[in-house]
Length: 77
Ligand code: FES
Image (tube, rainbow, N blue to C red; front, top):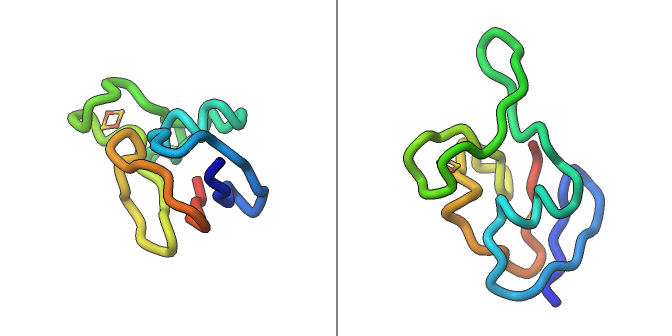
């Protein structure tokens, strides 16, 4: 299993899991907020809509549907 941190909580997921799947599986359904404060979450699942952006290891705007989990990854929604 691959261990990652999601909003400070440790989660274990199978290796190769895409980050969006790991987030949804952990119960995170609010990936980010729109400029007007609306909750946003994955829509297309293939890197087009940018609705699944999260902060990974301090780098904002990572499209979580395009990023495989990596041991020790720190993710913030
Ligand atoms: S879900 Fe659309 S870019 Fe990730």
